[in-house]
Amino acid sequence: MGKTKICCLDVSKEILDYLSKDFDVYNGSLGKRINIPEKGGIKLLLNYNFPDNLHEYDILIDEMKKEDCIPYKIEENKRKIIIGGNSTYFISNYYENLFDPIPFACELLKIEFTKKKDKIPIKILFQKAQYNIDYELINEIDNSSEKYQFSNYDHIKDCTKDVISGQKVTLCDNKISKVLFEKFLNKITYSQTYFNPYKNKEETNEFSSNIFFIPLLKNSNGDIVSYAFKGENEITFMLPQIESKLELLKILFNEILYSNFSEYFPTITANAWTKQTIYGLPGNNKLLENIEANKQSYIEQKQKLETDIENNNLKYNFLHT
Image (cartoon, rainbow, N blue to C red):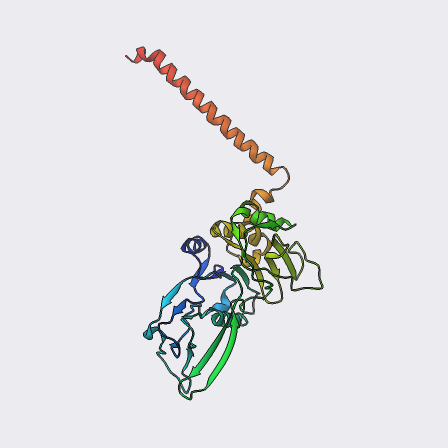
C-alpha cells in the first residue's frame, strides 16, 4: 500500500518538509513570470513543473499567490527538440514587459486531471484574485498563429464573484468554519469573493451529502471568501491568505480530512483521528484529566519522598562515618 501522493505547487519549504514525513510529495510549480527586456516579438516558453504521473496524485495544494519573477534567458525559451512541423512559441505583445505563464499552465493542469479516474482529487488552494491572460502562439515553421485566453482559476471549479480585498472576516454558521479559523480571525486577508454554484439549492454545512457547498468565511458585506466544495469532478478547499499556512494545514488534515476523507489516506494509522480530543468518546476526556492529575500527584509525592530521604541521610550519616 503506497503513500498518499500530494502534488504541491509553489508552496513553502516548511510545508513540503511537514507533508513529506507521511506522504509522497512532489514539489511542483505552475510556473514563474518572466521579465521581458524588449517590447514585442520575444519568443517564450512555459516553465511549469508537474509530475508525469499526475493522474496518480490524489491531493493538490496550490499557493495561488505567486510573486516570483525571473529574468528572460534565450536558452530557457528555446525548444530543444522539434518534431514534425510543430515548433510553437508564445509571442509577447509590443506593450508587454512581463510574461505570465500561470493561467495557461492552469488549463494544462485541468486537462491532466481529467485523466484521473480512480477517485476525484482533493484540491487545497490559498486564494488570489481571479485574472485572465491573452496568449498568442506562433508556429515558426508555417507562421500559423492561434490565440487563447485563460484564467488562474481554470484548474478548479470557478466560483469567483468579485475581486475585492480586505481583512475583516467572520465565521460561518458551521463547525468546520470554527475548527479551521477561530484562532486565526485577526490574521486573515482575502482578495476574491465567491458564489454558491448551486444557485437553486440551499447551502449545506456538512460533508454528508454527495454534492455540497459549505461557506467557511464571509467578509463584512456578507460575501463568501472561503469555502469547501464537492462537485462531480473535485473536492475543493478554498482558503484565505494567512501567514500561518502550515498551522492551518495541520488543522485541515488532522481535524477535517483524516476523519471525513479517510479513504484518501490509507497509510495513516486506521482511525488515528479518533484519538484526537475533540472526537473523544463519552467520559474519556474526564479520565484523561484524572491521569494528568495523578501524574501531578505522583510528581509531588516523589519530590516529598526524595526530600525525606535526603533528611534521613543527614540524620544518620554519623553511622557511615
